[in-house]
Structure formats: structure tokens, C-alpha cells
Amino acid sequence: MDSFPVERVTFNRPFVVPVGAKTVTGIALTDGVWNGNYYPKGVVEAATEKYINALLDVKHDAERTGVIITASYEDGILITGQLDEARTDVQEQLSSSKLRYFSSDIGITVDKVRKIVLSIDFVNFVSLCDSPGCTLCTIREVKMASDTKTETATLSSAAAAAPVAPASAPLSSPGPVAPATPEAAPAAPTGVPPATETPPAPPATESAKATEATSVTPAAPAIPAAPVIPAAPPAAPAIPDPAAEAENRLKAENKTLLGQLEALKTEKTELEKQLSELKGSTGKLTDENAGLQRQICSLTETVKAQLTDVILGKKIELGSLKRDQADKERVKLTAMSVEALREVHSALTQIKSTAEPARAKLSDDESTGEKLTDEQSYRLKVFGHKDPVKV
Image (cartoon, rainbow, N blue to C red; front, top):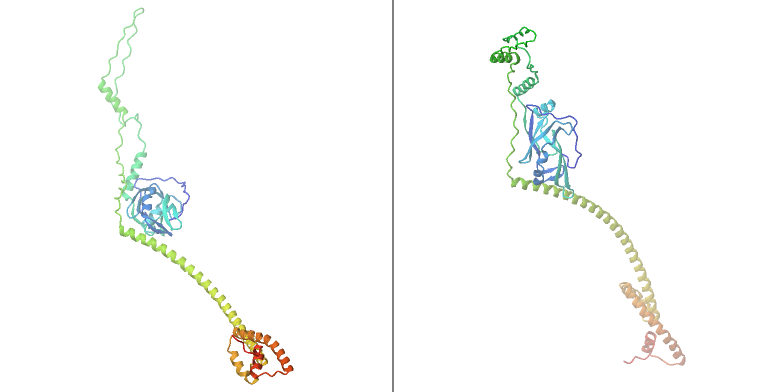
């Protein structure tokens, strides 16, 4: 069964329906999922009349084998086809059950997204086959004419063709002969008109019988005509089966869901591939980040060591730290962060810039001979002035 519109086929050999023709009956199409498309019951039932006068062939060979004479809807489109008497090979295959199915060559309109048949536009022909697209389209009955009927039909045809004897043919034995007509009387004397005598007419009844006996041929005995096989009566309207319809709907929905599931599986596979590629890129970035982190840590330690050395040097220079306490102070500074060390370094730089003038003044005071206490000397070295600040 084709699931797309096809071109109509023109058959060259004329179809003859002889007396005692063979018939084949079965389901041509029913609702369900065939060749990936769902055929609803309403669409199938609406196409029933389109099967009447459709052509029969064998395995889609486009060789005319017969014609559909009746079509009705029961649990599907039930058709009866009349077979061509000349196709004895087809009759033998049907009798031996080698051809067990119908396959419809039809034109349809399909919703390509939902895979649902919207209408059956025409029926090109119906094939007798052994492997259909619709597994429920089976041949249910094959009727072959009996030998007696076939012989009777042959005799009737021969009698009708026999020539009939012409109506003027004589019989084998002669019938009675009509009396001869009397001769005319002798001529009358000159000048006298002759007397006219009318011959006696033959008896009407005997003459008619003799004429009928010589001109009528007995008719041949009539041969009764062969009985005509009546067409199959139309089937009773099918009673809808809600359970079957529900089952068919569920089958169609299941097929749709299976298609969606396959699409989701394909999408999942693609996403997993992208995720794997992303993980690979992330791993590379992580490795690069780890290297950068190591470099940062190394640089941080280097900066901390440099800042610690500078701070220790400035403290010793300012006199706020003795050299024997430098190692202990280094441990404390190493535990500090780079930002904290930078703040300490900034503060010491500011103190040093303030202490430089104080030292210069101290040198001047020492040159003048002014004596400073230890506290004044320390305050002067550290804070740049010798006297306490009053608040």
C-alpha cells in the first residue's frame, strides 16, 4: 500500500466478464498505522465508494486482472472483485493460497508532522499479493464457478452462434400441389368480343395449408440460458467498536511517543558530546589556573621576602629594632599578608621621611652642646621631635 499520491495507470487489454466469472472477497484497507502513517477510521470509511470500479492486478504489476464490483465498510473496507477468466495463473495462485492479501495503490494527503492521513484522494488499483503494507488486509473468500455451470455456459454460447435455416427452405417430403390454372377459351368470331370466363379459385383452406407446408421450417429446440450469479448483497453497516478504536488510538500515540523518544535520545547524545568537550576545555583551563596559582604563590613569597627585608632594614635604620631581634621580627612579618606588609612599609617610609630633618636638627643641637635625654633622643629619632605632643 503506497502512502503517497501516484499517477493513474491506463491498461491496454480490455476486460471481459464471462459467464460464471470468479470472484475474490476480502479487506482492502482498515484503520491503523501502515507504512509509518496513521489511517483514522473516519478517513478510511469515507473512501469506501472510491474502491468501486477500481482495477485489480497482481503484485503491483499493472497487468489488469479484474475489477472491484462491490465495496462496503465493516471492520474495514470489504471489497468483492470479479477476476478475468483468461488469468488462469492468478486463479491457481488464489486457490493454492499463494496470494492471501490485498494491497491498495492509493493517493493520500498526509500531515507530515503528526504522520496522520487526512484524506484518501483516489484509488488507482488493488493488488493481489503475499506481503502487504496492511497486515489486516486479508483475502477472506475466493469463489470459483463449478464445472457444470461452465459447460452450460459454453453450450449456450454455441447454440446462440449456430446458423438457422432460411424460411424458404423446402421440406424433405413434398406436400400437396395446388390445382393447375385452366387454359383460356378459344377465340370468338371476328367482330364479336370474346366471352371472358373466370377460372374457379382453388379452395382457400387447402391452398393456405399447402403454402404453409412448403414455406415454414420447424424452429430448433430452445436451450435454457446459464443461471446468472447474483452480485453479493451490500453488507450490513458495521457497529463501531469503542475498544478497537481506543486501541488503535493508543497504538498511534505510542508510535508518536516512540518517535519523540528517539529524537530525545539523539538530542541527549549530542548534549553529552558537547558536555564532554566542555569538560575537556574546563580541565585544560583548570590546569592552566593551577599553574598560574603556583606562579602567583611563588611571586607572592618573593614579594613578601623582599618587603620583609626592606621593613627590617628600615626599622634597624630608624633604631626601632635591634639586629639581634631581626630573626624573631622576620617570623612575625612572614606570617603577614602582602597587603599588610605594604602598609607597614608605607608607614616606615613616612616615618623615615619625617625623621631625616629631626636627625639634622639633632646634629645641630649636639654641635651646640645641648644635652638630650634618652627619651628625647628616641622620640627625636622615631617621631622627629624631642618634646611630647600636647593634645
